[in-house]
Length: 363
Image (cartoon, rainbow, N blue to C red; front, side, top):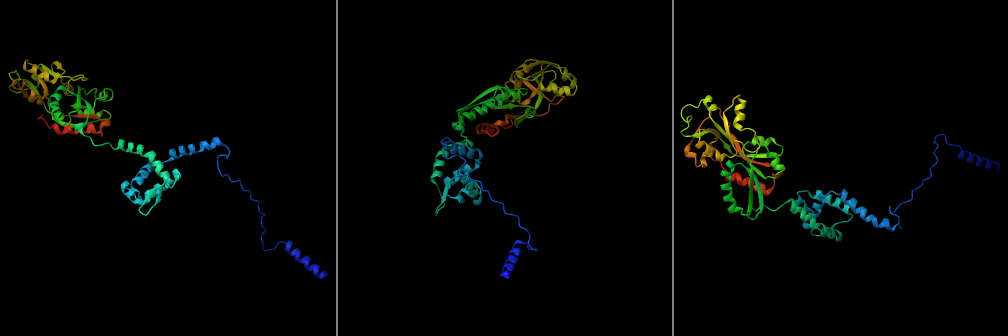
């Protein structure tokens, strides 16, 4: 009996005493679990429950990639992920990925598989019924119909000098009468100095004239050359300087006339002479080119002007042309427009038409 108790006590001691090779284990901590919240909106808060769907919809739109709507529209029309990818120029996996994002954003399967492709769910049909008119309206706005000159009704305001009007408008008027009878043209005076304000404040659509370099230096303006302008010294045929060498001194001393268009301070030729330290006897400045030839034919005045003025003038047989001692560089005459009209279909059509109609008139 005593032996049995000793063994029991010894066994108990061994159980209570730590083993030499075993490490003491830390006591386990009690796990406290947070209560599971099944919804962020209290069950019995009717106002919060009514507001929750609206908040969710607003958040969905604000965070949505609107490119996904194009995928959705194409899937609705093609009923196939493969065909939708071909239309959108996307891989099948890219379309499938976009569809997964749509499903996550809108909280619906949207499409289900069929033997021939996919078909929309009830929610997908409901969404498309509401989105379709707006989507098609945006698509039409961003991809307008082709421009048809014969049915177009609109007005173009163009700035030109009388020199340009005489060479442009007869051909343009005949073309419009035949191919674009409802187009209206409104002309205003041409002014290089005020070119940018004319586009910004006066609302012109196009300008046709010289000094394209000055126009291009203004912000936002484009230019395209139509023909070059060659200048000569014009005078009546029996003028004292019409025969023999045209020396610099008698040339500068002669009575000169020139043209100053709106906004110009001095004629261009005087600016050129100034760069050479020269000055001429300028006795008259006019505001129209067509007036100048009549004055030259009836007086001793001479003028350095575009030689092409003689082509259409009734005074051509009374005048002669000579090379001036200080030559005026060839200047381009062309169209000037604002960059905001770069891709406007009516404006592109007008510029293309003028380019085709207006070949070089001979200088």
